[in-house]
Length: 286
Length: 175
Image (cartoon, rainbow over all chains, first blue to last red; front, side, top):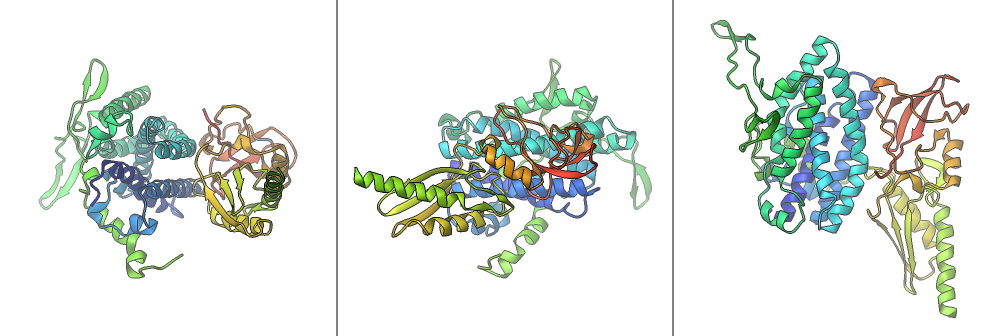
């Protein structure tokens, strides 16, 4: 359906914002305290507005684009569709997403496609507040009491390989880079983000989440024949290795597929709910 | 020359009409003092107004568009009036005029801080010194409660001097 590389770029950016915005909005009324109800609700409202600006550049009816596509036509990264889980996961995901998004937006602000550069100029000014929110929680949980720190680290571990796949190469990316529409390749953007992320995690001694990924060794899990020790076989984020004291990406992705419309089992229930009104009442306005 | 004068006169009337349009979420401030009117263009057959959204997700935008069409329509004569939201340059909070800052204050809303290309980071988890002056007692002894508030453009604060909670218009600046 969307073979044009430029449309693919817009849809991947817009769908990330729409779908993660939808997840953020699920905290409305349920966050740990009222300031966080407001924070996640406001961030959701921003993200959906950013999606709208990008959909407007795609052209056509906005509701049809946002709500009228089949699940396999959405281009968001799998990270954005994962359920909120606990607070540790939600905040870890928001941190990973918004720091990665900032790297991508810094590049797109220099896009040769003027309309994209203009919109990104507006989006960046608003995203600063999201990054600030995520960093404040990062400091609070990473340097907090043992349970806070552990649950945040668990959240990072669970989200990390999906987050790396935010930089999965786009279909037709070579052309976008050649034309300066995407001033840097996703591989280069990923390298820059990993450098920043690695430094931030090392500062609070949480960089072990790069290696210690998946179930913790020694954790007991129930089975039909009683509790057994969990296998801790997946001990690294796919594609990420440490070289010369730095975390680098050497190819391959764990939670990839989103940019090609291949989603996880978590996407369809979200899509069902998000598009229900649109599908049940075609043409309804609100 | 007479023709140019006439178009210029209409353009002035359009600016006056725009100055009568209020921000529906902050009624004391006009959209001209808010600094969102980027361009007015008048021809024999049209009046075009370009507006800059303050925050992209502001739900007041549709109301503002309608109000602008109504107000400009009164002075446009037979000309076709149109409103467009544009994104270049991005709206920044230093576009608010001195009169606009006073209007915010009169509404109990602290005007945005920062006068240069400085971004004031906001997040209430650590109750930072907020840099916002209390709109009620004028004290600077205030803390930030949250970077988020009842609308996208507001943060929430607490004044340690007069012990009132208050809101501020968020700074949105380049750099």
